Amino acid sequence: MRTFLPFCFAAIIGCGKDSDSSPNSPGKDVDRGASLGADSGELGSPSSDTAEATDSGSVGGAGVDGSDAIGDTLATAALLRSWESWGESVPLALDAIDHENDRDLYKMFIPPDGIAFISAHSFGLADLKLRVVDSSGSTMGVSRMMPHRVRGDDPGVWVQARGPQPMFVEVSAEEGSVYPSAYELVGIPVIGEDGEPNDSSADASARLSDGSAGFRSSIVGESGHTEFLGLIGASGDTDHWAFDAPSDGLMAWSLWPVASTVMDARMALTDASGAEIGWADDPDYLGVGSWFDDVGLLVPVQSGQRYTLSVTNDRPAFGAGTLYVGVATMLASLAQESEPNDDPLYASAVGLDESTVHPGYRTGATYGQLNATDALDVFRLSMSEPAYISVHVQAGTVGSGVQVRVTAWADPYGADVLGEASVDAGGDASLRDVWVAGTEAYVRIEAVSRREENSGNHYAVGFEAYPVPLHD
Image (cartoon, one colour):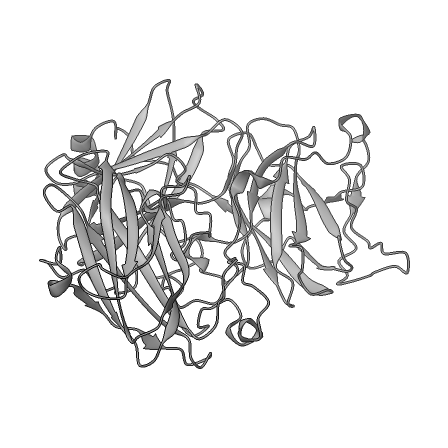
């Protein structure tokens, strides 16, 4: 989540995003999440994993000493019912986050190579988090929310058992969540993996044509989303998945949180000509981003064109434990830059929409590309009154190969420079809280370096305008 200074306007703006917008749009007022690898601590003691506690089935049950019926160590974890009875219609557990820092730990036995989707649904205001740990207490995977926020802030994680040892799932609440809060824990057995052979782009196209690719409807029932399950079945294996873009615009590819210690996925995207146009060394859906969520890859596509996604494992592991689960979808409609816009006199106009929730707060968004001889793009912001502006350019976090510099001017000739920003460690650039004394501003996005000169140099950019400073 973005952090703002505690000015009086910050209380009005909140997170600076409208709550009535699409989950994929820049107007969503939601928690921005955190990275999958943020939790590395251990639970309990491996030697103490000898006792099994049973879930009382009650919701709540807080004790006066800040305890509840569900234990928070391996030894006191509540034993979930047998795998054969799992299903979406009957929750595995009904309980509650009873007090601050409450953690409920559940023990589960999944058959070797068994695959399951585990999710938690909050009935209160708590922002839940799931963590899967192995029998030694080491973290295997964490989920704070589902890709594209299909169930709000509720988390979901995929699990593949590697052996007969028990696994554990921990339900807790993010720091700052409201307590208490009832929840349900759901486990769904899943059958499916990638349609082999899919070791090349030609294989992927053949699997798409004959319907054997292994695509499936979304496990959470989200229309418009395509899910795909895969395994790295052999050393050095690369899986390929073919997609036909359903429309023009931005298409997203990302991986669900998966409880695994042997899979470190990397993705690349090629177009119909075979040119690579997107790269992601960290393709997990993280839910963070200076404007758009970090989804792994967010790439401009053309309707009906064939795109091929390759997935590899950066760890020298294969077979059981290398499960990955991806989701592909189109982003909500978003305007594209209008060429030629290399000269401020021909700048692309960006419309700023007034917030329906926060008076005085306006936003706009667009995307563009800086391939080949196109070295820079210029945008014009028109405002009804002087304001602070912020510009958030995402390149690295959307799978682009371009490094950019962002400059804001008060005039079309570049004589009055308002501010400048270069890329951060993630490959993005944000220019924050720039005061515009007039009613017009020009923003230049310039390519400083490119991974490939002629392809893969896309970016997405969000604009804000507001009456008082908001950002740290």
